[in-house]
Amino acid sequence: MKFLQFIFIFLLSVTFFSSCKKRGCADPDALNFDINASKDDHSCYYYWIGQHYGGGDIIYIDQTKKHGLITATFSLQKNHSASGGFIQTSTGVYSGRSNTELIAKTFGPGTAAYDCYILDTLGYSDWFLPSKEEAVGLISLSKLGQANTSSIAYLMSSSFSDSTSIWTVYMPSSTAITMGSDAKAAVRPMRTF
Image (tube, rainbow, N blue to C red; front, side, top):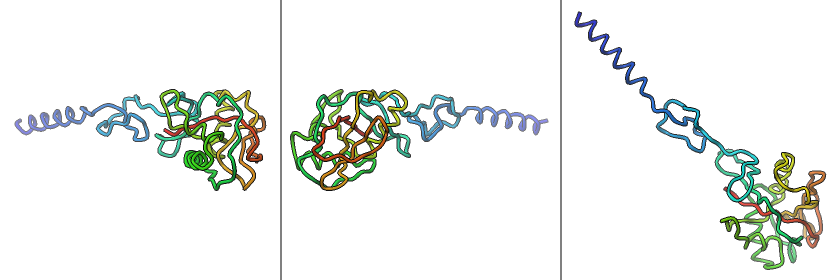
């Protein structure tokens, strides 16, 4: 009889303690992941393309699912020229910031990169002129109808293709083309998160 009582109490204890799992977001990819949660309560949340966040709209989320690119919801008012000369730049994602800093410090005021570099708006001062691939990324948001790009024909990037040309995105056909570095195009600042 004591043995049966022991078994009963033991099973009751195991059942009680095993059912006391901490509830919360158990997905490590979620922004609100709770390392102590052993039972998911469906409260997880994530970034998504098109989400209004950080002074603009998210156009890219990297593999971590916690970082990416934000485009401003506005273009700078005037059409800009790329630079006062040639400088070696990159075309890839996450190279717009370094391209912008390099162009702004080398050629100074009067360039699109400089205007993005000194931009301080919506509580953020880390805007930059997007690289070729970052500017191309704006096309996906535009196709979702969320990029407010209907008035933009040519969108400038901070990536030179050679000593006289810069990569530009021709928005109506969603293609990257080269234009002379003195050509005028719209400027859409970006930032990272």
